[in-house]
Length: 76
Image (cartoon, rainbow, N blue to C red):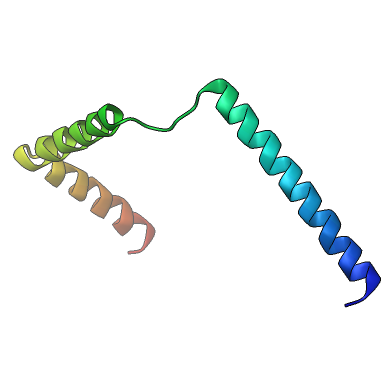
């Protein structure tokens, strides 16, 4: 391995490690710990509500008809 390649690799590793350590410390200071189970359950509830709404009304058919009409305009 040439000296230039070795120096470049070591410099890159040092910079990456420094960035990683700085970012990790900043994240810990802010107290970010990711999503909680309650937040995930809330998202799931919203998605289920949307799916039920579309399945139980003619909204789904209306959306499909509008999309089909627009596609037909572009590609007759």
